[in-house]
Image (cartoon, rainbow, N blue to C red; front, side, top):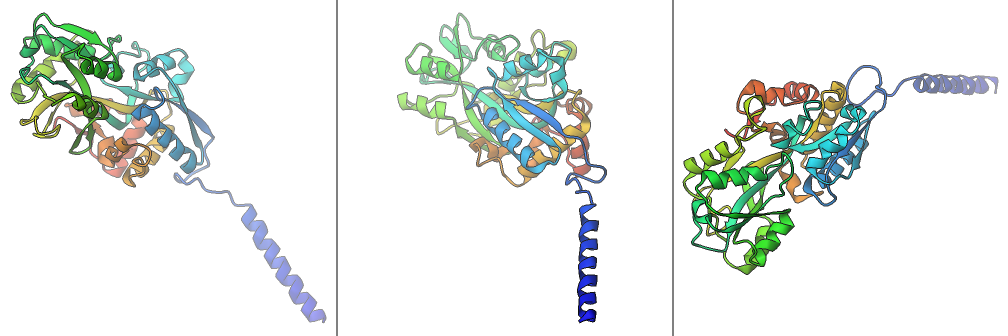
Length: 359
């Protein structure tokens, strides 16, 4: 009996000792070796509810909260992509705690020289083209004397690119109607505008589709695309259209033009079509610590690799590891300078090359 009691006592002592040793171990951080990091909270300025970038920012915020031991995130509603930077500019403390959904052309000037949003990863492309129901409008010059619906005329936005295209393409005596996508569609549907600028969908690397706006407009008749064909000329027009104050000299933009293959927009698009493509991307100021951006980039890359954005929004299927590192900047040094150092560090460790759409 004494021997049995002694064996039980020794077993209990051994078990308690093992448990005590385990309870003294610190849980390792899943994002790497080293001491556990202090908590860090970030906020996404993400535009209007329902915007593609708002929905996908909610997705990324969710992934961060689920998969980081020390970074947490929430999402803030704003009046739009332009307003994202304005919201940050209201308080310099936000420079280091905000992931900014921004875009070219405005990203380089909205911060007024005090704040520069540096790319973490590409989010989507805002692709837009001239469209009409009039089969006789085949070139930009044919838009002379017409009323044309174009994007909002916001400070340092991108509506001026289309105005410059009209002038460079030889259009005369035209009238512009400015508005959001819905306003432009309504103007085309009710005949207030005879030709207008509407978006279409692009999923990296090479999938095109009519947007819901184009499909809705097609209910009125057959759609025609005036900026198809004459690719060299039309790409040159877009390149020159991107050069206007304040986007000159050191603040000059890369050419924001791409080319869609024939039939990308349907049977009436018989030739290749040059179009304006403005990139929308997640960014952060240099004030955000590199290790925080590295952690965000790690989670962004892993979810892109697994294709986990698509269930949140159809445009999410274009978010791939290679797409994250795309850029319009042609010069390699300039391209690298537009990425946040924390994101750049992660991509280099993964062996990912920073590529340009111009390729």
